[in-house]
Image: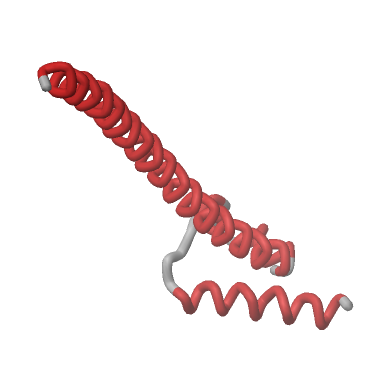
Length: 103
């Protein structure tokens, strides 16, 4: 009887050790996944910002160069991102109009 009891204690200790290691590894994986998810979210935000800047640059490129030269404001003001949806539509319309006239 005592031999069976000792065997059960040993098996319980071995299985308990594996469970503890599994939980430690699980926590490491979760923290790694959390960091990766945060990085992916940051990259998504950056891509969205870059898309908006490209749209603004396309609108600038579609403008008449004389209009751009005669404007006394800072050229970087044209490039910066507008969060408004109307600015996006306006830029798309400028590019479309430019393509129609040049194309």
